Length: 208
Image (cartoon, rainbow, N blue to C red; front, side, top):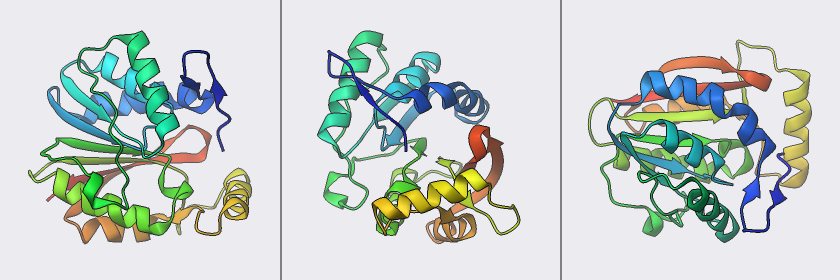
């Protein structure tokens, strides 16, 4: 689990977000459209939203998080950055359809949420992505640690999984193939799996 540091202006500093921002951004540059609308789910501290929106200026970037503290942090980082294409954070909860925004969007991003939430949140995420990405080719981007039948589980990820389940039995590393099957049931097809730093992977899905 990431250790957050609270700053005087209400921003939360996430070391993990700083470490993985550039590898993720490199992948996003290659696969996001030059222009369009992006919805970020579980945006956490907001450092990713600021980094990505500042670098990808043709995209309207809408971060979201169900946590008031996270939304306060997103707003604080956004105030510092002053990115014109970064929208105010939404109080979006994947398990509450009433909180979902109107689309359409061109991409939905979800970084490090699936393993620290109940499976019902992943089910909601896929239903939300199906609704938010109505056009063929719409992108769902997932990042995090997963169990994979064809890849040995790294000892650090095994320990991470144990730690997560000790915090909440509903949490834990998900089986990649189960996530892929769930996405497929909502019209989203896996098009790319890419290894990332610290035994994480990126999964890219496209709307059929």
